[in-house]
Image 1 (spheres, rainbow, N blue to C red):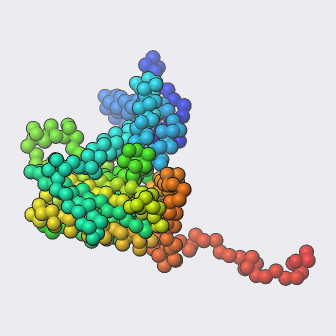
Image 2 (image 1 turned 120 degrees about the horizontal axis):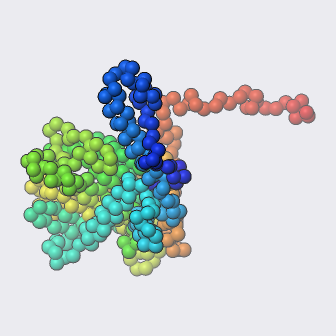
Image 3 (image 1 turned 180 degrees about the horizontal axis):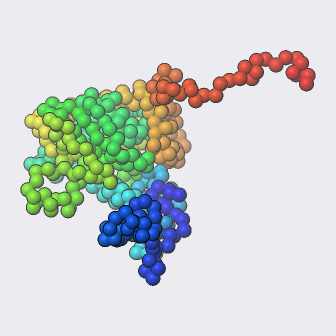
Length: 420
């Protein structure tokens, strides 16, 4: 079986060089004479050789996967969305053993581990910019909004933060991880489609939105990390565009192709942009949800609270983006819509229990409880879902699969039944 990219089982023996295998033909026969009866001998030989090569490759792949060693600490970290801890554990295992002879993760999980950790390290500079690097600081006292802005020749960068009171940090984490829920608080979004979701806080999405100047058809990674034990001390979420492979860049340089968008990511063939739409080459957002255990004067908040820090890096797409006042207004509006969504939405309760990320959310909930000081405000419970809201998540024929109640079970028992 498999556990988060780790597979175990007895190794499968590869075909021996001294004992060549007899490859299967397309009809399932192993006798070359039967093929020759229907075609010439030369064609039969080519089919047999090609089938034999495919079989050898298949057996080699199975052998490689079955030799993957499972480590309980590594698999636990991956299931809990602790990708930084998983990387550290993997480095420790490889440092104490023969990394060339032992493999702890399959290729797909290894790619995710490297990509997510690289994005996390890159985002730390985006979350804590230095003023001497050309950033403009602007604070809005009435809304408690901290806003920083920088415009270069190629990029627009914004970092802002705000404390949310009366809202649980876990709910904010779920609202950001469940990327399709953005439609609830971003009216520019026209459509969101999941291209791949693995259930450990990493997914690939297609998002179509109508902005002021054009319609965008973008593909974004969405990665989530429980980084409460890291120096950041927060729940981390980032959305970012896939990168072009180096080989593809070289091919474009020689062919003169103007298409600078990747055609594949995480083994998924990416859909082409819709006619009349644009696809962004650069889009990076990062969110840090930091629980607030203490108030301004060291007192314990009566209700749950957290600080949400957001960072954005992209190419300027419209002239208004170059004005800090415009961007600050956009950020403030986002915070207000997101807070309203967290307070009123019943989708968070459903996703916390039934999303592919549900196991990770439960691990994060327990981790938050462990990190909270004894006098901290209790976490907010999930919203109760009435049948009217619950029904939209159920298939239309759900009642057909319910066992009917037997009349004899519902009817009151007679005195004769009670006596025996």
